[in-house]
Structures are given as C-alpha cells and as structure tokens.
Image 1 (cartoon, one colour):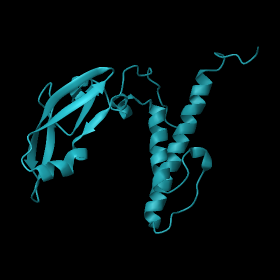
Image 2: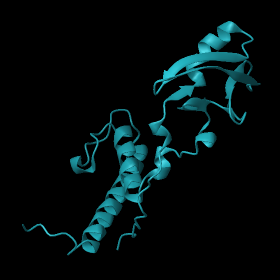
Image 3: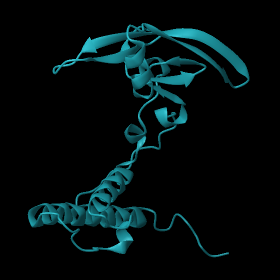
Image 4: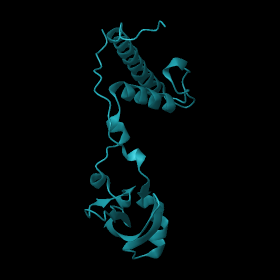
Length: 176
C-alpha cells in the first residue's frame, strides 16, 4: 500500500504571486553606479491612484568584499530584498500573504516535484509522457537517483488519485 495523502481544505487566501513585486536586484547596477545611494524615489499609478514616495535603502558587507543593498520596508522597517505592491510597496510580512508553494495541496506538491525532476532530466512536463532517457553528459548515478525519486513520486500520485476516486464513488452521477 502506498502512503495515504490527506487532502486539506483549499486555501482561500492570496499568495504573493498575486502582487506586483519590486526586487532590489533589478536596481543593483544603478545602485552600484550611484555609489552612496540611501533611498529610491517611486512615482507610479496603482488601481487609478497615484503614489509618490521614497523607499530607504541599507547595505551589508559581503564576505569577499563589496556590499549588498536591501530595501527597508516603508511600513515596518524590516530589511528585505523584495517589496510587494498592495497600494504602497511593503514587505511580505506586512501584506500577510503566503508564498504560492505554501498554499499548494499535497498532491500538487507531488506534481511540482515530479515536474522539477522531469525538467532537470530534460523530459517533457507531465507524468503521462513517461521516461524519456538519460540526458547527454549526466552521470549515471545522478540519472538513476532522479529516476528512482521520479518513479516513487509517480506511484504516490497514482495512489493518491486512486484513493480520491475511491472516496468520491457515488458522490457524482454522470447520468442525465
């Protein structure tokens, strides 16, 4: 018997994927050229409302020289690398939204992991396409490790799907 996957209730909250994001890495080159920048001025329109304000910056030293810039959240002053737009740009803690992966159902996590392995192997996405062989230049041990994990995930997916079908027998009628 394959391990049972319990299905929790569907998530009804928003994920961070629903918000426009402002990453510090998109400003990295401009900040290094500017030298001692300590803020960035923003002017934008969001949902027919105009916004104009500054976001403070801070920087930390890296281990091998140079430094890394960070945003300071305008709301809570936390040091973050990404701000999300909920009217004004704020950190993920202030928005209170989760990452998309935190809202996935257990079976979706299995599919995501299987697709990640398939992508690494250079295979077509989707477990229905089966094993498409070892990629050129990949070590045999790496290939066999990935294929073994992929096959284990496919077994779990099939077992969970069969369990869901068994649990839902008699609930839906296909007759008209």
